[in-house]
Image (cartoon, rainbow, N blue to C red; front, top):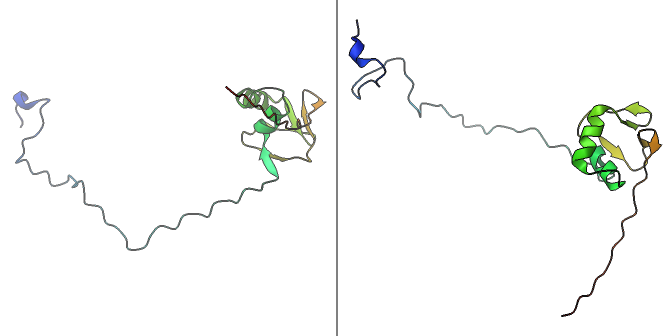
Length: 113
């Protein structure tokens, strides 16, 4: 029986625990792990939250909350899934109103000293 004087202490260095594993006792196989191929993203598809943000409704983070609340429909179906991809030709509606992507405007500013 162990004495109560060693309670809460670490075992001494010369303690030989037979069932303890050594930290580097891993066996490595010669075959490298094969990772699953990454999906190629379609350049015509963008995430739904970005589509809503580009339409000028709100920010991308706010769009995530609207998507989760079920306020957004794509092609007549309510979408609550995060990361849903849409095409530019899809019918995206927010609270019943159809969203159109805003045309990007580039402004050239010359500011000499």
